[in-house]
Length: 410
Image (cartoon, rainbow, N blue to C red; front, side):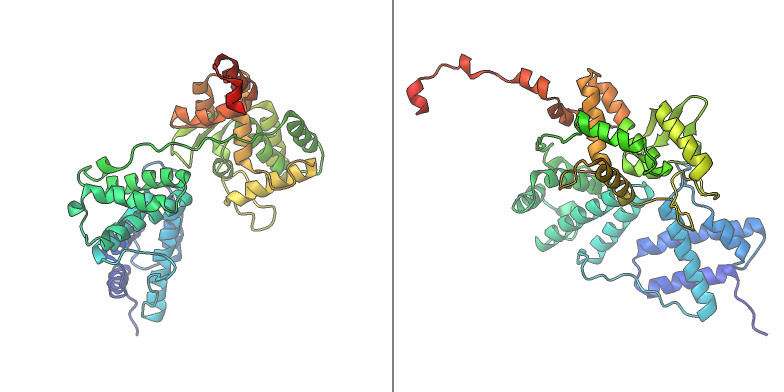
């Protein structure tokens, strides 16, 4: 009779096969830590095989160890570990290979590859957004490849001027706004990779931000939106999402991650941890939003065990997760209202600008606007100053005070 392998021996074999398949040591260590959690759960449950009960318990363990919030990367990692174990136990071999997408640049040296992979894993543990991770992955990879071409394979011996030369190279093709992001991403990488802040000290200081006129809704456009929201042509779910964005300026990612427990009905506030900054934010539960929420939750929200508020209307009624969901909703309502039907800016970013500009025109202090929008840096609100046309006109200096000869203008 065939003796089924114990869970511990299966885990050991999978880790061995991961190494044989070419996974870098940092990735193998990451899987090892996850499997240690699985074995600990098995010991508590008193099982030594990969039972369905153990798998269900392990897959439900999706809370971030520091924040206690749902962590999607943790869930995906657990699922990957279970999949590998099942493949080994069912087929007797491990056939999954690490991704070798030729379209994704990567450093040449094994040392830099492992350092880069560890940095990406660190960003995931820190719950950075997928857009931030991709941006930081790109700039850190470009930097490592740049210094490799200069003949260096150890950050400790890279001259300080190499950092400046790297940004000189970027300036040939990158715009100013992209360079600001590059500085931020490379600073994060070097802070992770260096024992000392040697190369960080050579990074360019704060680059000038390109100031443009921020687009906002006119009073007529806003009224047209509210007129549409009063009709039955918009679903109760979409009305809540639009009201949240139009009245609070909350980011799309935070709208989609709202959970039932985030709504404090007794104190009339919404409590969230912002996905972009990982900082807490308390928003007032305005009557318009609260009433729309009640109608959606009690009448139209699908009956599921999901803790997320906004779900897809079609089965299996999964939480809305993609930014495009909010964009599509806002764009549809704008179309119904007959506004911004061409190539103008749409989506929750526009509405966030709109909320800030309205508060600014009403004389709300910059600090209050910054707090309401959830900015970590209060100076981030300065960009909205361009939306107050009347105050901008007050700042203009007449040319009459500048002495000049008429002949000079011919």
